[in-house]
Amino acid sequence: MKTLIRLAMLIFIAPSWTFSQVDITPKDLHFPGSFGQKKFRKAPRKVYLNHFQVHFQLAAYEATHDQQFLGAQSKAEIGVGLSGLQAHHLQETTDQLYQDFVQQLAAAEFDLISAEEAGQAELFSNWTLRQGGELREERVYGFALATPSDFAYYVKKASDKGDKKGSRLGELPRLARLSKQLDDAIVIDVSLVVNFVEFQGGKSKLISRAKLKATPQLHISPIGTGVGMWKNFRPLESRIYFVSGNPAGWSPECVLKVAPKKALYTPNALTGEIMEVAATGMPGWTMTRSATWTLPVDSTAYQQHSKDLLKAFTQATLNLFIPYTQK
Image (tube, rainbow, N blue to C red; front, side, top):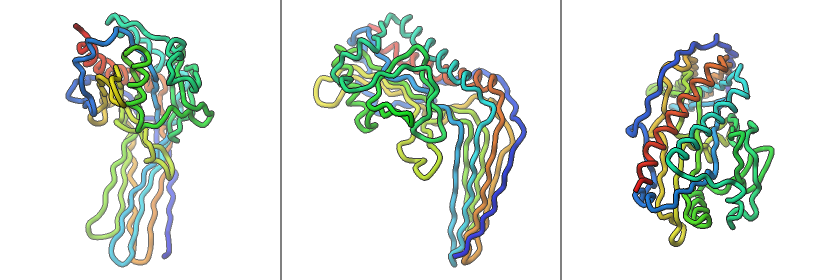
């Protein structure tokens, strides 16, 4: 089968920014796998922050396919990347978010267990202690991983190509074991994903016509997928875990998992040209239309908007969690 490929190299003008307040309510959140929340009031007023990670999307890729009768096939694909973003703005956003988070826990009369104290737990006997504050390459390509500057955390295996922190399937049992080894202290694990673009695909019912649209939109995504053939393998996840106790087996005594029900936006935070690509296949042919897109951003504005959005989510989460701990 013959293949036709057309490539469009497109660079759009800098987007506009509009500052606005972010309002996240419990209706915007869901709590998969949560149970026993009222038992948090019996837990010690000690917390351990196992991880505090913010995943910033820097590049994205999407493709859609369509196939019709007589072998007509079509494919539309878009790749897009950010330019102008300053690394220190991402780090400052993460640092400020972390400081606000721990200050609110302290205001609720929780004591924070240090990484050195948590290192006495059997679970971490062969793990590596990492110091935060360095913007790192994420294991999911297309994202940068930011951790707070004055924060230390443990990873199962350290690597310059992305640390391993253990199997996701065993995540909840591992947090429960850690809580038990820390005398039932509440273990908190924070992972947030900030995306900058949304994709929407479409197909024709009559002919082979693949369509794809990319819209600039800063948002916290329930998941973050990378770039390349393994883009959907173990995607990143936006969620905050609160776990305490491990009476028997793998299950904790109580767990609260807070995640976005759907994408959470900063209204009008990032607006710019919408890119659309369409390819129409012909019998015996595969038509591919591809485009790459560079999106220039105002780094200071990006910092303010992403910080407002992330803080709104963590604030809404703590507003749900803290009342469960009050006697």
